[in-house]
Image (cartoon, rainbow, N blue to C red; front, side, top):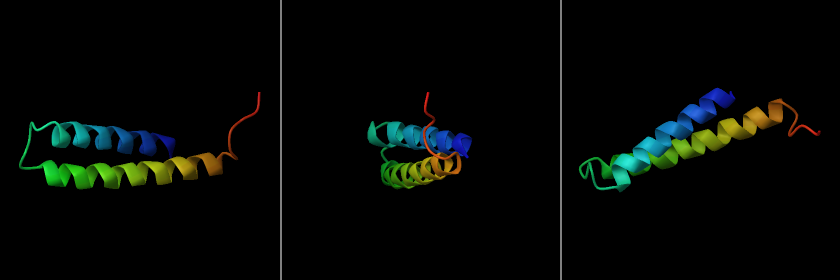
Length: 59
């Protein structure tokens, strides 16, 4: 599950880079939507992953 969360984070960062930097002005609106969508999905998968493991490990 954590792997999927990292994949969604990378996709969100790529969408933000290409959409917010002005390199692809036509797709900027779509990139912003994808950025926030994948960011939310990343956070959901991160929370699920942490709760399945029982939280942070104590040393």
